[in-house]
Every structure is written in C-alpha cells, then in structure tokens.
Length: 138
Image 1 (cartoon, rainbow, N blue to C red):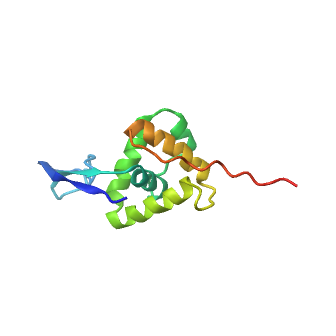
Image 2 (spheres, rainbow, N blue to C red; image 1 turned 90 degrees about the vertical axis):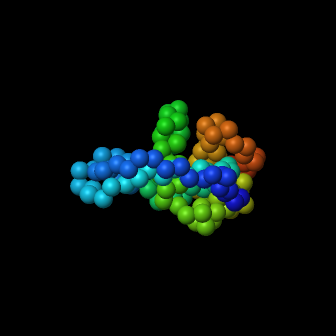
C-alpha cells in the first residue's frame, strides 16, 4: 500500500504574493509563495484512509449522497496536504481493517459507502467489503 512518486514529481509555478499556503487570497500574508505541485499515485486504501482519518478532512454521509464530486476531491486534496506518507500508510491500513471487517467499527457502513464513491470518482479498484454486521436477536 505504498504511494509512489512519479518520475518527475514536482512542477513549480509562478511566485504569488498575499496568498495562503493553499493559494487563497490572504491580505495578511506578507511572504511571497511559489506554487509547487507534486504527483502521487494513490491506491484505493490510501485514498480511503486519508478521507476517513485525516483531521479536518470531514465528510458526512450527505456529502457522499449529494453526488458533489468536488467536495470529495477537495477533502482528498486537503488530506494529502495534511498527511505525511508514514501516517497515510497507517490510515490506509486502519481503513482497510474497517472496510473489510477485520476490525469491528461503527465506521464500517460509512467506509463501505465512501469506498463506493471513491471507486466511482477515482476509478480505482476496491476489494469486496465485508457485509454489515447485524447483532443477533434473542
């Protein structure tokens, strides 16, 4: 589940003034910034893990059901900027444990739903998720 860097992973854009680290206008920012773009190749698990566990990359069930792909891609963009490769690998492993049912979690149904959306938007292949666990009745 390791991400791989592209052969030429970095491109550099023009220097801009008064922008935040994400390129948004920020009158209070005095240091000029240069746009640097990096290409990463992510697996299903790495995308799912970042979207499930990156603090601040908050998705709700309504976001998944709305069909608004830009919300999902924006969250992934934010998660990639916030998460180092070592942490992202841990997130991917935890996400797959939940998605496949190896670990019981209240996130299972959400992870499966998110997994369906991820495969649709990004075209990655996902393993078969575990069926939802239903508590036995007496």
